Length: 513
Image (tube, rainbow, N blue to C red; front, top):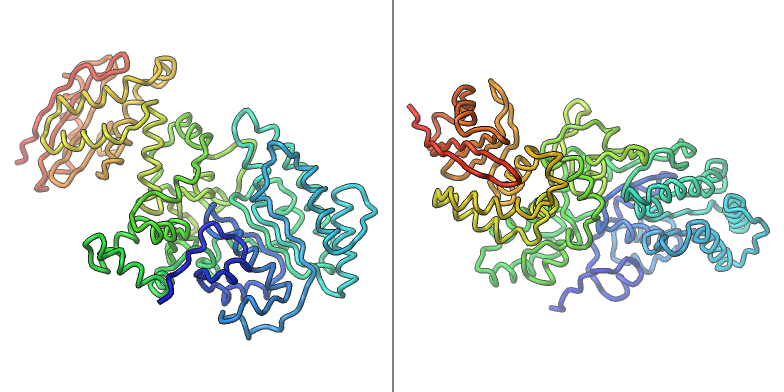
C-alpha cells in the first residue's frame, strides 16, 4: 500500500490534491455552506481555516477536476465566478502598514483580472473592482477573507494597542463598502481567531451569519473521531505496536491528548488537525499545537490578572464572541485563541475548560514559569511528585522554595499571599492531580487542596502569621469534613510564609472516626 502523505503546512487545496496528500472530505458541509451568502467563522490557529478558504476559492473558480472523488463532485453545477481572496494570515504588519497592504492587494487582484482602477481611496477601489467584475462576468463576485483580524491581534501587547486601534479604523475603509454591494456579490466568507467589536464587518454587514458555534458547522474544521478512524487506522495500528499498546489503548491516548474541542456545547468534539498529523508523522505523543507559538502577551496578561484557574468557567455567549480592544478580557481571549473550549451549555450559559491534555499541561507549565520566573519547572514538579508519594514534606517545601526563590521581590511584594496560592495550585495541577485553589466550604475558604490517588492534602497559608493560627483555622472551620469517610489519608498542613519563602510548616494526619 502506498504510504500516506500528510498535508502538514499545506494550505493550498490544489497543491494538496495534486500531490496526493490525505484530504478529510468536508465538502458535504461546504455544499450546505455555499447555499448561503455571507458568513463569519472564528476558530483557533492551526485548525484549517486557510485550507477551507482555499477550497472555497477553487470551488468558485469552477475547478471540478480538483474535487474528483469528493462528495461534492457531482452535486453542484460547476461555474466560474470572479473570486477576490484576501489572506492576512501570511502577512506581517510590523514592516508593511495596513494601508499599503490593502492598496497592494487590491491592485494585484485588479491586475490579475486585467481591470484598470481609476479610484484612489481603499473604499472606492474595492467598490470599483467588485462592480467591474460583476458586470463583466454577469455574476456576483465571491469575496474570501482569511484571518481578517491579524492586523489587530499582531498588536495586542500593551505598548502596541494604539497600532491595533489604528488598524481597526483602517479596516473600516475596506469593509464598509461591502454593505451596499449586495447585488454585486455572490458569496462572502470571512475567517478569524477573534470577533472584535467595533469592526465594520459586524456592524455594517447586518446579514453576516456567524457560524462559529453553529450546530450545522460544528465539525467543518478539525477531525472527528470517525474521520480519524477511517483515514488513519492502519497508521494508528502501526504506532500502537511500536509503543506496545493495543489499537484501542493507543486511540484512547490520542483522544486524551488531542480531542476535546467543541463549538456546539460539547455535543460534537473534534481533534486538533495539526496535532493529529504531527503525531501520526512522528509516531509519538507530544505537544505539537501549543509549541507553534503561545503569545507572550497572553501569559503575561493572565499572570498580571492572577488568572490561573480557568477550568469550569461559566460565561455568556456575548463574553465568548465579543472582543473589546478597550478592555481585553482574558477569558474571551483564551476561548477565541483555542486554549479553552465549550464543555457544556445550560440556558445560554456556557461552561469553558481546557480541551485536552496537550493544551492543559502546556498552559499550566507556561503559567507556573510566568508566576515563578523559574525556567524549566518540569524537573522540580517531578521531584515534588515523588515527595508526596513518600510523604516527605520537608523536601516538598524545599522544592516549593526553589520555585518561589527566583521571583523578583518588586513583583512579589505587591501580591504576596496570592503568589503562594497560585504556585501551589499550578504545581499540583501540572502533576495531574485534582487541585483546588481557595475552594469554598461551609465555613470559610481553604487556601488550597490537593487530592491524589491515596491522599488529601489541605493547605492553610499564613503570611507573617503563626503555625498555630493556621492549624487552628483548619480545625475551627473543619476544612477536612467533606473528605471524611473516604479511604484516603487526610493531611492537614499549616504553612507560614515570609520574605518570599516557606519558613516553617506543621503537618497533622487527620484521624477519621
